Image (tube, rainbow, N blue to C red):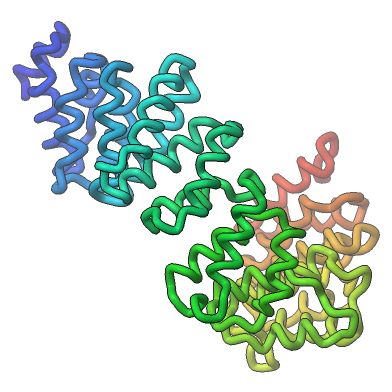
Length: 420
């Protein structure tokens, strides 16, 4: 180690294996990586073979292997990028995701590399002699490298998605790449309709292809399929969840109560989000009551999913249900995190009074963890006044664990005022 340390002043490509060996020892023993890592990276392309060995070393921590993989992609010469492309769809999934991200960054940083990678990825996903999983991985990276703005590529993906003889992995990847309305509508609708047929929908692959196809359609086109196939009643959670996001809401009330009876939290969230996003011009009294119950303590009918309870609170804010939210602020049967969500919904849902109601609760006798959360949420106030200023200053002085949050919010809302 001392010898290598002395030689490090005269960095030579031939020293790459020694630097890599020292870096490996440091990683295994959780010792500082300097100077070995910077020295290895400083060798540039000469470090690539040894970096590749470190990335493949299963004894090293995964987060370090991913970090080394990013440096490997950055240092690989352009003419050698094809070797990395051939690794897509192979091996560990975490490393696979890191490799995809690194290749996309490399393409976006250099026009020459982008052209080279696009050609290599395009050739590989079309090569039928390659494993379907590897072809699918290349297809997805190609979509990201092209910024999703290549009409010819979208047409090829649409054709692939509709090809019932193509491997399932490739069809699924094509639909993922077309998400958001990039594909040819008629073909994508055909994929959805075919796989939503009653005799096929129970098959897992058909269910997944139908779900991906629906997400690849414009929401209005998808809504027609959702309604005609009555997907809100589907036993498949992913189809039912999408249906509640896209369905035509019935004129009569009661649809929210129906969704809240679902055993799947993702469906309850999708339905409540229709309220939170303003799918209806106003919230009925029944809806407000049901949302307040779901956002409250479980002992009084609150939802057993914190995600559902949180989105219910946000929906109450959109409904302008300040009175219900104010009661929840004082509800000791819900967590501090949930009460913070309630405070945020109140501040954003009632611009005139919401932050003042929260400020009135921000007292020195409040539990410190809750005071810290309320102080943080006050930074969202759209029209702060003296009540908010005084509450933040009071907290800054009297609640040590909330001092930094209160000071941060005060400086955001009142940048030119200091506390007395």
